[in-house]
Each structure stands twice: as structure tokens, then as C-alpha cells.
Image (cartoon, rainbow over the protein chains, first blue to last red):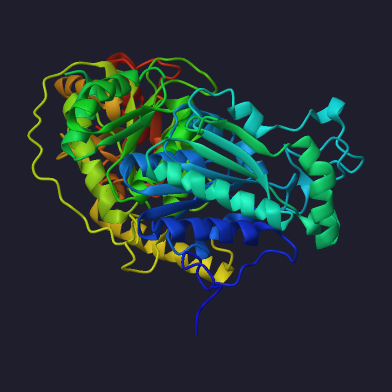
Length: 249
Length: 349
């Protein structure tokens, strides 16, 4: 009997702990598919963050390291410098990457470290129960912005792809979403390209994935996906922000 | 050679090919030396964006099983403390150098020993220890660095070289005859599964309290072995001593002179110089308390090691403090005065 669909080999059989409707599962799958298709599982080392995906080390079948909050790109730098022929990726949320780990993010990009960063932007701190994130939208109600994010009080959201596009060192930056089939397919293409670039030694890639957090947004899974479409994507436009190796024309 | 440069060369001789650091006085010679040497021997020198990033790069290399180091001075070591805790929680070997300067806060840039508590008690959150080696000469900057890498690998933990600005900056002749490097098996390292084994995970997260308790107990069983086997100290003129001076690092160099001068004046005084601050040479101090009537702790802090002396000798004998701080080094006169006071206090001949 022909197998038409199966779990990627690069994912273990450990049941995911994510909430119903959370899109981490989709992104895990896309990363694992890319690893499978490029045949790199045996020489890949992943770095998990602190946040909802803290236990990603149980879900990916490649060797894994669990970093301190925000430090994954620095740990990835150490691994890559030690094992330059291996494939190194970090998987980080918005609090981890865009707040406490901003320096590590910017400088690993500036050094054009030959690593792949998967950045989950769901505009909230999920693991700790829904506090305001650096990427929370203006007016967004969270546990620590109960009257809505007041930009006069706590500033504006950080747009990582736009910011890093000004960093000379960065090689490939793209923002994608996983709220519908078309976007999931685009996200897969971007993630695979980021890993492909690393295999080819092209340098630093970051794929920002606009994701949903129904639990902490207080929405049903479907309504959360609609919120991504209606609120998140207009603020965080999808697309390629930098690609040093883009085909011309 | 200059102390900091000698230390760097010893690290290379110990097989370290990865150095990550951030500029801070008075240890920058280590980074400068590494930036020159590493590219020539196929190693990596990387100036990180922060102390925090540097120690996490160390964690990355250590996870792959290779020898790696970073160095800094007191304020920078505070920033590295997060990483020191993760190194412990992940049971990773690494060498970290603290060329101490006066504090707290930005403090000064002159030598100090005021990070004793940090190194031996509170290097970060959680229950853990580091092996703490205190060189008092350029030769020991070399030998203890070589030894530090070995101990780190042997026990899967951080070795800290707790030096000070003076030992780092001073020049002395050294021998680089260090012997063979021992290789340790590291089956836990994240080097890629090559599709031949289950994945390795380097991790300090453990949400099951029973399991986390067991991990801590197992780690401390290893620490108990270290306390039993690895304490190092130098004993100087202690044979018939009535008084015992305890000093480490650069302070011990002055203390040694003070002991000689006091001896010439007929005072029966000796010195114990802890070489490892953790494990602290408790047995040697306890034994000294059997025959000595008082101790003098010579420190470039407001008195930190003095607590370990009192613990080791169970407060049987008075311990007097001879202390200079803020970048000041105790003079022979300072130490002789305290020896004299101890002679009276302890009722020694």
C-alpha cells in the first residue's frame, strides 16, 4: 500500500503539549519536513528557547540543546563554530527573540552566522499565561496590559524582519504565516529555503512565522486564525525582507 | 611572560581551541592574545556582543564536547552568572577566568579578591558549585589553567580561575612543560546523531520535582568526591607554628614575606595558602587549629574567606582579619601588625 502522508521522521513520537488550535505544531512539522527533505537530520542540532516551545527538545529527533531565555542564537553560534559542517537552528518565540534576546538576535545576524532562526511571533507570552509581548499590537489586551497596550506608556511593537533588513550581515529574512493552507505552503517553502541556504553556507536566515495563540488571546482556534488575518498580518506584512541570493527578474 | 598571556597559552596547550570574550580591564590581554593565536592554530576567537552572549557561546561549544573558555573581570562575571548556573544545570565542562577588580558596581580597575563569595558560594541561581583555583604566580596561571580544563572535563562542571589584576598583569619566568592532555569520553555531547543513536539533549529544565531532586543529589555526590580528592594548598613553615596565616593569590605573596620577617623576629608563624578555594582545604585548616592558637586571614576583601576558615576550624581558635580593599594590596606591615595582634589574642609565644 502506498503511503501518501506520514509524520516526518525528524519528529519524535512524544505527544506535543501545545494547546488546542496552537500553531506551534504546524511549524514543528514544517521544520521537520525541511530537515527530512534535505536529508540533514543526522547532522542537525536544534536549540530550544524558553517559552511555550521550551520542550521542543523532546519533539525533534535530532540532537537538541535547551538554552536560557533569549540566548539561543549565542548558543547556536558556539555550536556552529565548533561544528561548521553541521546544521544548526534555533526555534524561538517573540519574548525570547524580540525582547530578552534582542542583542543575541541582532548580533548573530550582524555576524552572518550560518544558522537558521525560526521565530514564532504570536504577539503574546504564552508559557507564563498571556502577558504583553514586544510584538503585542497597539491596544491589545493582555494580562499585563489589561486596558490594552498603551503605546505612550510601553511603546510600539518591535518589527524584527524590518529591523534586521537594515543589518548588513543578514542573508535571508522572510515573514510568513500559518493561518491558512496557502500561507502554510509558503511558510514551508521559506523554512526549507532557510535550511537550504545554511547547507550551502550562505549565512544567517530568520523566518518569522505569524502564529496564533487561541488560549491567551481568549479566542476559539478559528477566531484566532481570523485575528491573524485581520489584525496581525496588516501590522506585520508578509513577504521577503531580505534575500542576498534572490534570483533576479 | 605576562600572567594573562601565560594563562592563554596554557589554555591552548590544554587543547582549548575556542575563546569567547568581551573587553574589560584588567583581563583584556587574554582576549588580545587569543585573537592573535587562535586563527593561526585553526581555533576560534570571537569577541561577543556581551558577557552574556560570550558565556552562552561557551555553552554551545561545551555542548559539542570540546574544550572552551571565556574570561572577564568582576562586573563582567556578574553578567556571566546566568550562564554559570546553566553550565551547572546542564553538567557541562568549561573554564572561566575572573581577573578580579575592586567592587561593588563598576568599582575600580585595581586588583581585588572580593569575588570570593561569588566564586565559592553564589555564582548564580540554584544549588551548584564550581571548582575554584586561585593562582598566586604566573607559573600557577599556567599550571592551574591546564589543571582546570582537566578537572572540568573529569567532573563535567565549570572550573574558575579566580585570579586578580596583579597576577594577570605581572611578569615572571614560566615553564610551559605541562605534560599530556587527558582525553575524556563525552557520549552525552550534541554532535549530531548521524542517524546511529537516539538524540542527545543538553538541558537544565526538569519539571518533575522528584526527578530534579535526584539530579541535584547526584550532582552533590560528585561534589563530595571533589571535596575528598581535589583540595589543594601550600603549607609554609607550619611545622612548629603557633600562629597560622591564611592567604591566597597575590595577597599570599606578601603574606609569605611577612611570615619570614616575623620568624626572623622570633614569632612562630606559618602560612597555609589555599590553591583551591572550592574545595576549600578544610582538613589542613582543622589540623592547624590543633596546634596553632590563632589564625590570620589576609584578604583583599572585607573578609570573605575568613568564614571558611572559621567553619573549617569550627571556631576553636580566634581568626583575625587583615584586610585591604578597593584595589589596595595589604603591605607586609599590615600583615605583621595583625600577626602581632593575633599573638596577643591567641596567647601564642
